[in-house]
Image 1 (spheres, rainbow, N blue to C red):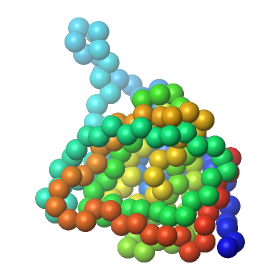
Image 2 (cartoon, one colour; image 1 turned 90 degrees about the vertical axis):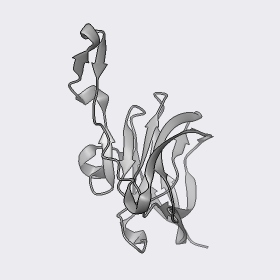
Image 3 (cartoon, helix red, strand yellow; image 1 turned 120 degrees about the vertical axis):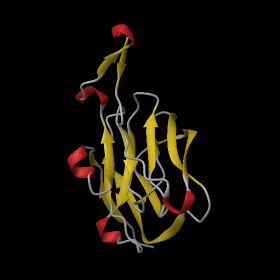
Length: 165
């Protein structure tokens, strides 16, 4: 079976805007609170989880490290809610996405590599591969939709995709 290749690009808020939100605390001006002993970085992610009676739930994920190149065979989307990933280590991870739609357009798949300090949030319905930790296991806090209905569509790629740096 033939495969296609996808070169990962650095993750930027502008390049990722059609897929979701990128949070980079280093580029934000926090609000000092608690007599100046705490910096508040507020309202960071526009979570969209109330569709069809859903609610926001917080999870902890631990992703095993993988080395590039990696062959991807499938993608998924969450049609009823957005999903956010906040890494707990300063460890780069790969993000592979395609625009939100009912049907996956494989020609529109894009790949990004994070700085390791960037959090991401997928818009509701954005096609994506699960998080890909690079070089070392990575822990994530994940904000996701819980509630009634099927909130995970999975699809096999017609042509497997090999991602590279």
